Amino acid sequence: MENWTRVGATAAVGLATAIGLRRYFRGGVCRSDTRMDGKTVVITGCNTGIGKETVIDLARRGARVAMACRDMERARAAAEDVKKQVSNADLVIYKCDLASLASVRECAAEIDAKEERIDVLLNNAGVMMCPQTKTEDGFEMQIGTNHYGHFLFTNLLLDKIKKSAPSRIVTVSSLAHERGKMDLEDIHFERRPYGREEAYKQSKLANILFTRELGKRLEGTGVTTYALHPGVVDTELGRHIQDKLVSMGLGLLLYPLYALVYFFMKTSKDGAQTNIYCCVAEDCADETGLYYSDCAKKEPRQQAKDDDVAKRLWEMSATAVKL
Image 1 (cartoon, rainbow, N blue to C red):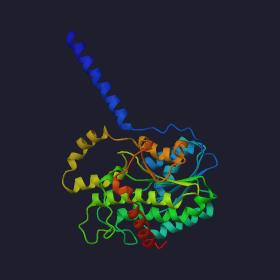
Image 2 (cartoon, one colour; image 1 turned 90 degrees about the vertical axis):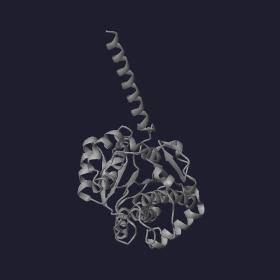
Image 3 (cartoon, helix red, strand yellow; image 1 turned 120 degrees about the vertical axis):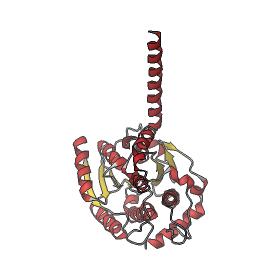
Image 4 (cartoon, rainbow, N blue to C red; image 1 turned 90 degrees about the horizontal axis):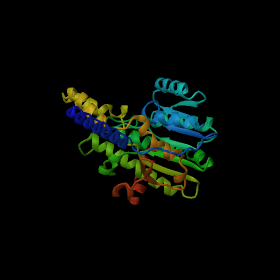
């Protein structure tokens, strides 16, 4: 009997510890009860993952949400699913392929013509660690999609965002920026060997530098800017990592590895919390150009605070996208 009591106590402690750790790894939660009635939010890449969860939350707050997605069929399916959860959701879908500057321009023009205001722009879409490929315009795919596409999209919508002030521009970056390096002389890996991880880290560093420089350029306009790390989230974004393991003949490792890693990963709903916080929270309304994680300010690495590199990246990007 004593042994069973000991086993039961040990199991209870283990279960409590596991539950506590799981809650810890879920990260911060947006506690703001801010309503978004009468406001319009534009979100890129939101037919799945943290983008879709953000749509659900903002729709519940009364916002009109414009879903700018590459795959219209999946976007329509996502919108229908959101409406099942939020019966009065006000949603509209626009086609936007961030790997095509022509598509970005068409989408921005359509949104500008049809939407009366833009209170929040959430640059959420992204690709991660994909094989070496190029965008329609010849950019390395990760910097082209994660940075150049959003750089152009933001600037094309900027006049309407300014007119809707106070308004916000939120860009999803990553903790990966901490090991990133901006190689402005070879940003597309044309001379150096391509590394899918290096390209991803560079693109996420670019997101923070863009947010920093944009914040400076918008001082006094009533538009504030935010970059964020959503956490390590269980979404489709990691599909290229799985593909790489399979190509290396390590596909059998996927299941035990996933089971182990999943315990430390956030769900899409958990991962959307800092997105939501930066879009709605009143306690960060007067902050701009900063970086956030788990619904709180966080200091990025030194290379993400280099104003000279941020300015040079802006100028290079403006030339590249023919702004």
